[in-house]
Every structure is written in C-alpha cells, then in structure tokens.
Length: 73
Image (tube, rainbow, N blue to C red; front, side, top):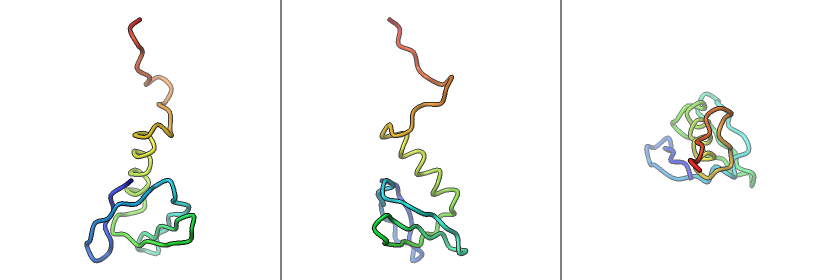
C-alpha cells in the first residue's frame, strides 16, 4: 500500500498493484484496473516513486545489477 492525500487533505492508503494509469490534468489522477479514479495532491513523479518503493518492499522489482548484497558463505 502507498500513502496518498486526497485534495481535501484527507490521507488514505492505495494498493499500488491495481494502478493502471497516472495522469496530471494538472491534478494527479490515478486510474485503477477496475476503472475507479482517485485525484491526489502528490505530483505524478512522487506517486511513481512511492509505487517503485512499494514494489521493491514486496520484492516485485529485483535489485539493480551491482547493488546485490552477497551472503558470506
């Protein structure tokens, strides 16, 4: 889940796995795979960074080449 803020200032959590499209109209609008739309205060780039961080946390994205942690065996 990623933490976002509605335009009225109310924070909420959104499951980033269901995000299909992020657009700026100029407000950032997030469309989910089920068609639901959310308009948030965060800029598009910040939402993208939160999604990437979330994917890394749940191991959907692997570590970049050269940044792997090696086990001492």
